Length: 286
Image (cartoon, rainbow, N blue to C red; front, side, top):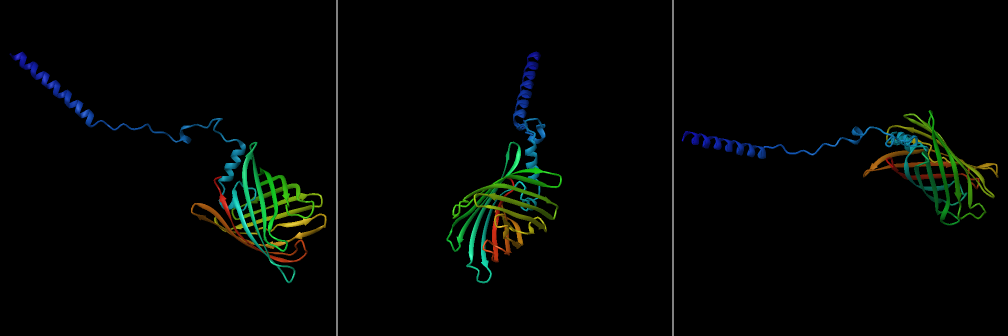
């Protein structure tokens, strides 16, 4: 009798303990956590497949520069779309007022692991004595080289004049640019030369900008000088300044500019005021 009672007590005790352990393990089991994924940069060691090529390294160094440094440097890696409206007011009775509009995309890219800058200037005559229409299109592609002092580039250029009355609707030649900069100054130049049947001329644009901070700058603006080799004379001699401001418009970086200048000599050997206004749409991460 006693051994039966002992067996019943043992079975009850074991069953109670088993039920208690099962309930507690289900009710208070810790929530299963998903395995943590480490950041790619921390978990993947640099390998030959992930390392940058020399051209990609130069592109990344360009992207780490201040936006205002890149916006004032014609050799920097910066995709931008330039829109400019120009009013031309001749002095005295030398002619009627004129209006021109220009679109100028600048697109950087890598080709054969070398930094390239492609730029197109598309000029449209809105109001001129001979009528409105497409005026000139100038294209160039620069292969950009980095130096200890800054950057320089050289490449081919093309000029199209669809409404030209001469045989120089198409002309080619070399183009070059260079720039160096400090925290407050950017100094450089752009030059383009075009040669055709009855055309031989060079454009020279000095680059000079003072950067007050990360948004405001004062520069020489579009001070593009033109020399005609056949005439042996300058046919465009502007002098001016441009006040530029970089803003953030709903997440889009925009550089606004106002650029008055005085042209001491145009193609008709007269003087004129040129008032330039517009904006640049900047894509610093492209």
